[in-house]
Image (cartoon, rainbow, N blue to C red; front, top):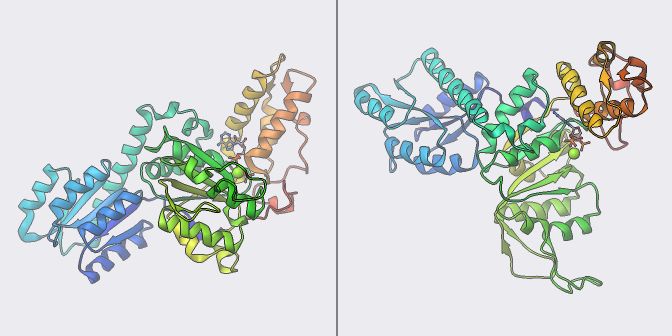
Length: 417
Ligand SMILES: Nc1ncnc2c1ncn2[C@@H]1O[C@H](COP(=O)(O)OP(=O)(O)OP(=O)(O)O)[C@@H](O)[C@H]1O
Ligand SMILES: [Mg+2]
């Protein structure tokens, strides 16, 4: 996967400053430190960005027109109550900076700022945003059926992913989930929905690789009554069914250019045109897409429209392959065994030797492969304790990172890392 498409785990910062040079200097300083940085030229502009992106920290000028920094602060905290805000002010106006802290700003810096001091304050503020996200989680969201509790694994890589996921879920931002086959992209998409304000509305899934282009169009956009031969009844279409909720377009890179154009138009207009109907229908859906391919390369090689890519890739979430988080293997194996035991009259348990044996494998098919291995071992094992020989690994276990030699679970699957 292209490094440029990796999500920033340091946090997302919005820099608001009407002065182009100052804005660029601040933004570049933060980018160089690994933050994702968005820029806004005015308060109005900033509010529009906050409404659709998972921003952790806003860094704003106090003196701006027409909307001043104080008004922006008040409005921003209404749009994004968990946002951290640092105000930047000329040294003559420290009093008003202190006033902003009473209104909910986290900190202030005086201009011209020193890089070291700015970075220190930004780091403290983004750390606080991260803690806040964790507190929210512990406040009860963990029990969500399709939420984070469905995602087993507490490796640093998974913790980073879930922390970003929770922050992103609160916004309406379009999310692109990338990861090899079987890594858990669908679970991640469901978790984003389960932690979003849309959680009580539908989560609708459309697999773009499973049907022909014509069928996909009919399924997504719907059609009028009698619009097609044999189509007596009208069909609402999945866009409309997801109204108010989330539409998950799985394997979005497996679509044709014609379909991609139609999808782009729909997303830009927020309107669906049913086949055989001229009047468009307004829809309010949050879009999540997923792909197992290196989508940046699909764009470079002209198989995927660049403009659609930009539209879908507002927040990238990368689900790491299992071989990059082997410490999750024991917990995942136990999880899948518990599931198998729940359906079995003779519960099994994992031997230490079996866990060790699994830990030495590279899992080219990722979590899905581990799930299948455990399920099969539980069904076929002769004794109550599962031993290494009960796991029929396709190849001699190989050390991490050597998965290229291993067989792929599906013929269309390609390495995406
Ligand atoms: N972190 C996890 N915790 C528990 N189960 C998981 C986890 N990740 C994946 N799974 C399970 O592994 C299987 C594959 O996950 P999922 O379908 O979400 O992967 P995917 O990336 O969409 O795969 P594909 O590219 O093959 O569609 C599912 O049965 C899912 O429940
Ligand atoms: Mg999937």
